[in-house]
Length: 314
Image 1 (tube, rainbow, N blue to C red):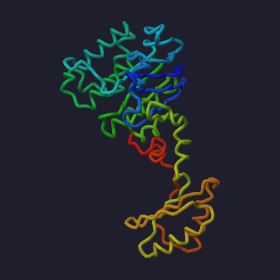
Image 2 (image 1 turned 135 degrees about the horizontal axis):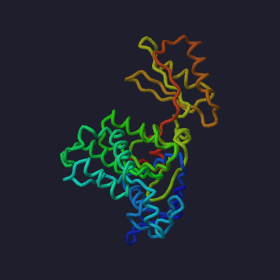
Image 3 (image 1 turned 90 degrees about the vertical axis):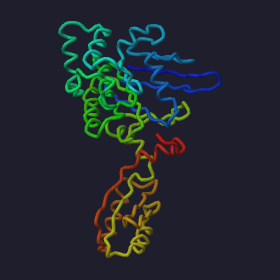
Image 4 (image 1 turned 180 degrees about the vertical axis):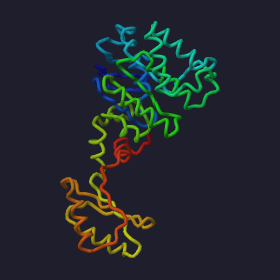
């Protein structure tokens, strides 16, 4: 178990992290979300022992990070922001160096080296100087060093930063595969990433927790949860369709995008799941409208994020 209690960090009179408490259990991938300057990276640094908290306790697999720092750090794999590596080394020499620091020896050392090189697809650049690598490859080398000792806890700060779409997909699949028996805390600006890999998400702003729930439950807070989005054919009267939809009992409003001929019907707050969908579908059938697309919205996490954090950007 990773357990954080009343974590606070102050620099002079400025409070960066303010009384954070949360836990992460084996099998969880915990997304850590917040606007720039919310305190995400500072929290990651405190959890990994690189920055001392002003107040609060951090327990990693039963080890207090302050009282037993070496034991706690042995349980942690950490990918910091920017993934610093020694630029004059090659990925092979750097990972061998990290393996030695982690006291990996013999067959286990070779097995772990081969495993992370394969998992992160580093073979093509193993003997190339790190300073000459692309940002994406540097990030992958950084992730490889974080998992080389097969830690129980992974702290990942922007793990897919700088990766192309295919590489992002591969890293997300890797995180999902590791999550079965690890505790993973993932700080990210990419809301799509939270929806793709996280089992739980914490949203912070100004150093304080504002929300803690599953991505699915957070999305349900969106005004677009259970909304119905339809595209009206070119031969239909868009204004008449809007007026007819606006009369439905279960709705909370109608939004129209004339350029795409799209109408979004917002479900009322007390509406049962599927109720607005059924009303819209029945109306379309009665009116015999030409509809080119029809879909049910599950909610927009980015809209929830903006509302919770006061409109700041991730």
